[in-house]
Image (cartoon, rainbow over all chains, first blue to last red; front, top):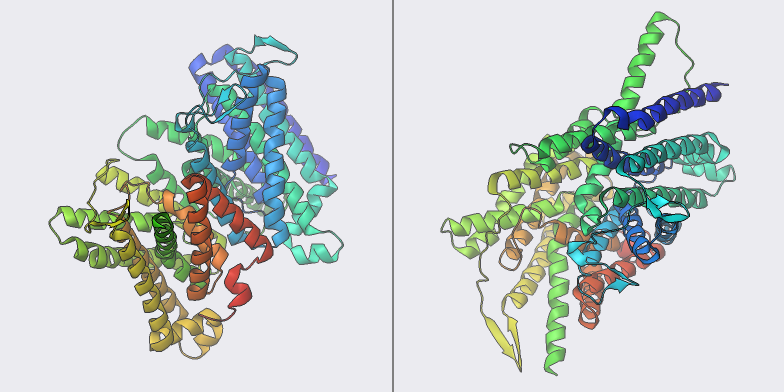
Length: 343
Length: 288
């Protein structure tokens, strides 16, 4: 019953958000629509890390690897097929395969959190160097030239499924991206409410105990990691659809750090937290970019340090706890539907 | 024959540079079990200290062998006092905080000095091997790596400070009951690790592009080396540097430097699958 209440709230919230997304082009100008589109694509990426880290307990510092792989896969496939539908599917499939391989070696190797974080970060750094070095005619897949540090310009954007001639307008692309964010959010909520979700939370809380109850933590963690890879790859396709352009900087250290910061300030162990963190930080970085006094890295780093030291739980859980304690003082506390998170 | 000598030199220099860029990280990881994600920025600060000192008229040898390590060592102690000490026992948070620190240092350096490259030239000349030309700086780096490892060994093995450090490394609680203050040992460790990183940064300054983001070019290799080596400071570092430096240089010679790095990484991931605690966790357990 409590679970149902939580889900009802999420559904109502999502329905309101969906109405907002669909009607946004009526009262927001095109520039802001474009801005919101990239924010929403990045929020999908934030959800992928929020899920595998906050619920699966997998400390992945290199979520950009899957994001970038998805973006490049989409770009290469869309140029070759001249149709975005199979390209989007491939942009999910390739990162999943990569996550399965990488995850197998790390998770079945039984390495610690610290090692996992470092290795995933290293993967993104090496992919950055690798893609950066693919300049020249030699590096091409089908008709698509990888372009090295120049990136791949002029990538075909989303078209109507089954009708490659009908390219979506920026407003329609925004609706697709925004609705995709809601679908991913609700999908993850359902997944977490399912028995699979309960098992991965149990594993996050105590791996040995879960193993003694008969669940093999390795396969559950690997599947969680692969789901994270799939969502990040999908976010990559959404991102390329926004800019019609992809370059190696999406593998770069700066973005890896930003994803972590989104999840940290939003709050681990929630799904809405990473979205809030992502939107806040994206907005902030855009604002910083508009002036010259402070370097964006400097501000982001300072924010990360302050949150780790002072608000380690992040915004969403801290706010929730404050609201809960206010209710508790009045003596009519609502039932605690949240999942307790060990920080 | 000449090509064999050149490739051999490349392998030696690859191993030496792995030892140099990873030593500070390995010391901090071995003692405190944390990975300092600001490692690349400590390298960068060492390089900047060297370049600024040389441009101010200081002798280049003094700048990279004394000024760089002392400056970055001081930075390390300050960082430990102001940041790391509040996060003892929270390994993941420590890593996140050092990542934040790395962004702050990159951003701060960019704000102060801008993105421009300020360079110093390599202080040693070159020499001929048959038809090939090589820099004398390469054997010098190898000598410095050897010297650094010998110094670490001597300090850890033969001094009282080294004895205390090894005790804290093995069992901090037991060391604390015997009158050692682990917090002070950690502070000294972090400072020493930072100083070693600063030295490496200073030594790299003449051969690398000195820019605020230069650290990112080195940390991937440093992380792999330390993770592959495991927690034993000296033997883990030497065995991993030897193995990975060899693989990296041979692969780079046969393909391209970038594919050499990819092959190095694949080798490291397979190694981690077989030896999850690194080479030293399996073969040099409990050794230095």
